[in-house]
Image (cartoon, rainbow, N blue to C red):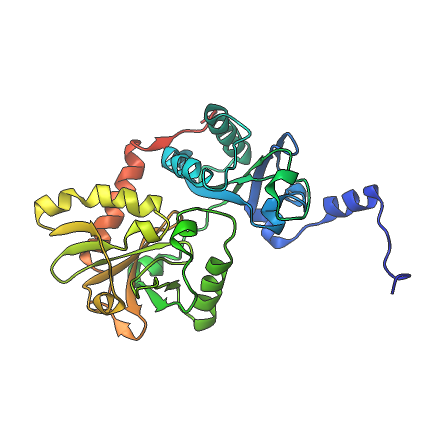
Length: 327
């Protein structure tokens, strides 16, 4: 076997990378790497060192936010959450926040797509393969801009399906850190795809609704209450948090009776007038079937339509957007 496996030279590896073309590379638009010291646009070169603790230990945090019509939506909120996430693992940003924002803007500009998704990773950095964080001399920053893929229109028009997950939730301590250790989330997504449903939702140790693999969940009760799981046991989603602010006036108008974080059992969700999923990419999606239960009349409800309209108006308003350099 040793005679059939060649030792490749540096030039042979680089040549192979430059020739490497796979279909999914068309979605990778630009990457900033503090390890490289700049921005690259060739997908074959968008790599992270194997000894970066982000790779072999999940020792890093990340954020994902989108750019629509050349405008970054809720960037400050995502960066605020990132700064909270890096406190627990005692990570440090290799750039000041001001320089970070400018680096994000320039990377998006180089991507050349007015609609895109931006992922930001702060890692412990390269330096060894043990679990010790002290073997890594310095943290690293990676910013990756990819194509934005929205759900098919029928998901908004006809609704999506939801299944209770069998995957245990993260502990309260780790649930509130948006770390790169996402194995439970990956298994939840696998579970959904294997079962032929759109999403799964986990239950906490007390049997209450928690969160999806990368989404938050909320219900509208038959008495008009908009209820979401308590955030102290799950990650506080930027989309659902913003939406709770946007829908608050609907209580005064009588469209809702209250907006609140609370414990929600699956049985309460089965009996809800509406269930919705919330996420950065798709904003809001209506759930029409949860486990074996039809939700409401089995069609997207009026609150979903109002909520989605409020999100779209918020994006158009420019209240919480930042325009990249050169646009």
